[in-house]
Amino acid sequence: MTKIEVRCYVDSCTFWKGNICTAGAIEVASEDAEKTPHRSDHTMCNTFKERKPEM
Image 1 (tube, helix red, strand yellow):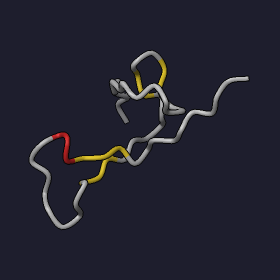
Image 2 (cartoon, one colour):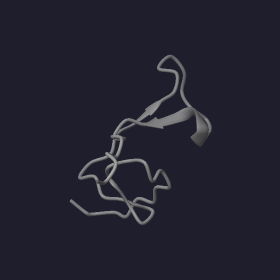
Image 3 (cartoon, one colour):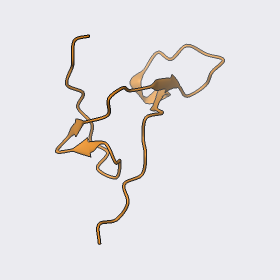
Image 4 (cartoon, helix red, strand yellow):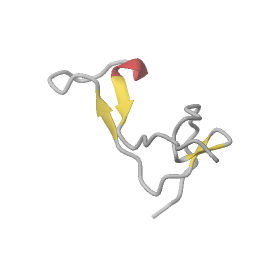
């Protein structure tokens, strides 16, 4: 499988590292399961996991 670079700007996610997503796999879903999205703001990244504050 070819590895691709995924840019991400959600720095509160565990997988975020310098605007790159480091997750092994990414799941993106439609905001409304009944409709096909036609714009990026109608989608959601289901891979997101909140980053724990560093102590």
